[in-house]
Image 1 (cartoon, helix red, strand yellow):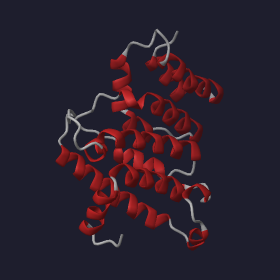
Image 2 (cartoon, one colour):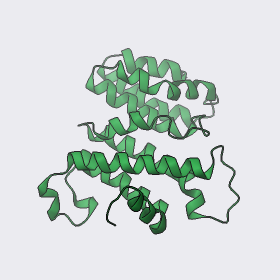
Image 3 (cartoon, rainbow, N blue to C red):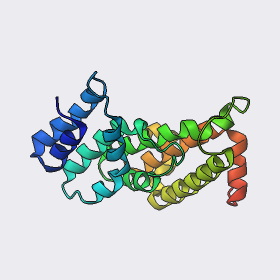
Length: 201
């Protein structure tokens, strides 16, 4: 069975079909008894943003992002949960729906540990970043998403009551992450954010 590095090499340099198959093999390898090499996974995730910038083929971008999203939860950056946020925000704007969906999943994954102190205030907090750090990251994430949503908003969106009914596109993907953030943070924290940034709630 191929290693993660071998699979990603095929994703980045193989023909269209071999790249697609290698991307799907990443999930199989991750869940197999042969996976075991977490150093490989960490190095791939840590370098994902830089590597992505070098990819010029649309199909390779999709395969690369899909493969990274499968293993993203194993990154070794618990003390810096937002280390890939600039890249993930960039992916939210991508015209390819599979890439946007992968970005939504990865951002949603980080919201769990970032909001645990808000959702379960009595729970013993044991993360490698402080509650204050988490609040700052959430505030930064909120304002970036709001700005992005503003950039992609169209008058036609007024007629849609639910996010799920919005047309597929960057605006819908951004709203999906915003909705999850608001749900996980809770009403009181969101009121504070709106007050901080001078927004109406």
